[in-house]
Length: 229
Image (cartoon, rainbow, N blue to C red; front, side, top):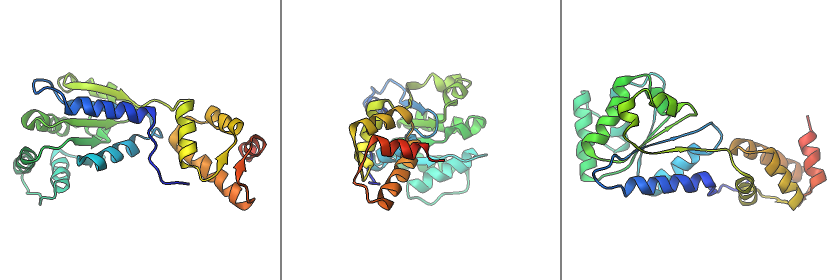
């Protein structure tokens, strides 16, 4: 399987949101929420964008405190964390005033039951003026609405949707090492709509193709693979 990042409709919508966030006037908030079920390519999209845009990426953990979060951000900024929370905040403020960057907070669901941690994120946005992107699972929007003063700061909300048939066809065509005949590809598009499902199935197909010296996957071959127990 080819290691390639595929530009799906979700990716295009994410890039549009990020452009809106970065180019927003100074008098508008610059926070956004990106959320959706697992297996839709959220993490891959976030990491692809962060890598190509020199952003700060932090991944939240269970029971993460405000100080823990600030420490992670300081380390991402290649600085040595201090002990006091107030000094950690000042470190981040100084670094980001000198060189502003987008802050991406992944797995934000872990912070939404900890008022002090999520409030620190809001404070970073408000005081420094940097764009902040919160990334969460399918219930993240509903949970964030409980923090109304933060939810009201969102300039955009993007839900990652299951892939449509064009997305699936594009993914298969671009990452598969083996060719699919049109009717076989159509069946794959009808059966799968999540990235993890597609990758797992393509791995299985490529193993079958290698063992049987197949160059192309036809509809009968594909149906046989799908029917395997």
